[in-house]
Amino acid sequence: MSEYPVIAKDATWCWFADPRAVYYKGKHEKIYYGYINTKGDVVISSRDASTKEIHTYILNEKLQVDDHNVPSILFLPDGKILTFYTEHNGRFFMRKSKNAEDISEWEEEKVLSFGLKNQLICYSHPVMLSAENNRIYMFFRSRNKRIPDNPKYADWRQNYVYSDDFGKTWTDAQYYLSSKGDYNKVPYLKIVSDNKSKIHFLFTDGHPKLGLSSVYHAYYEKGKFHQTNGDVVSDVKYNNHKIYIYLVSLTNFL
Image 1: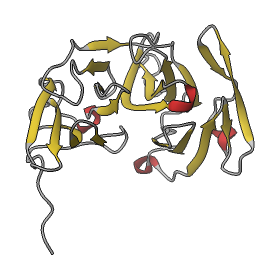
Image 2: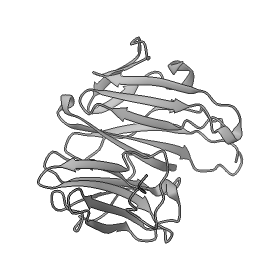
Image 3: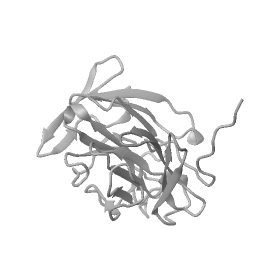
Image 4: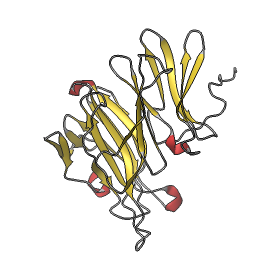
């Protein structure tokens, strides 16, 4: 049995930011992948499917030595690349490549707050839906900054925003999962999409190191959140380019 090829000798990533690796065939046929190295650099690389040649670019130098900061990758219809990455409970960053299918040149880094104040952000999950005119949804986790008088209070939230202009502007954040102040009820999330009309959510109601936790599933399609069997959990209302979801606690998704 042959060994797997090594594509990065100094690299790590975390489970909860996706997609961390993308296959894209346009003018070129390459795999693009992001990671964090031991210096804390946020890195993106590409590997040519034919020549096996690897190119690498540092998106943010020495951000943090922390695998939570791994970049997620999204290709736009014109072949240009958006990357998103965060600090481990801190700021949220975005960069866009200057040229299609090319990681050698990038626009300046942007720090995005999505209208949140006194909130710490972690993880990034971009999804583009072709059936919604290539609207880009961004999912991420947030929590409040520590309260001196109540240090154990932590409102963990899973939020989303969207962009209808390929990342130039974003809506304010709306949350759809919340621990409601319980530090131990951290909702960890994985997302899968057909990139057309449907987004699947698989999430927990806590960290296993803090005790037993369960796993739940829901999906979004055509403006509604659904249970696995298709029952509607919540309508999504569009009003002045903002989304409001009325059911926001974990128990609403059981």
